[in-house]
Image (tube, rainbow, N blue to C red; front, top):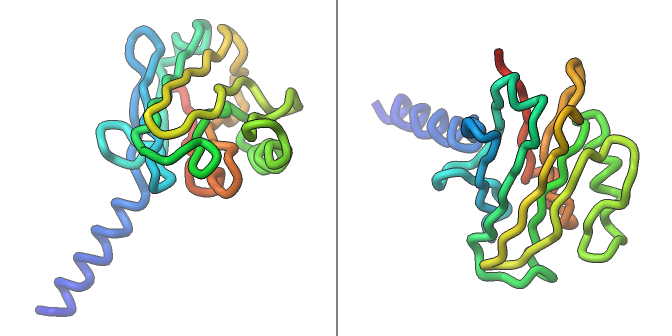
Length: 158
């Protein structure tokens, strides 16, 4: 009995760490919270994937970020960088020494927001027709040490 309960708790913990998929609304927008525990969340649940209707590929996609924490951006800043998945680490590395850890213009970077601290809000607009079919995209926070945890994939569904 105890073994089964422990297994159940372990599986529940595994599932909660994995996060969930959030969908862009019909206007191709989504509001995401960034927390002081280094998570992207939607509705209080950790975000792992963003899905969008295929029709959004030809429209401007807007991702709004609300930093729900209290810490200053110098300590726990958050932003959103829209990147090609294969180049996420290169973008994160290039952001380490830039002002406010905002990535420089580079290959693989589609768009980015400014970095905000607790209580701050920002957004990033992905220009229409920028996201190519056959390329995997995602979002990351480029504040030092955050990109490995604060990330989500961006996929289109038909």
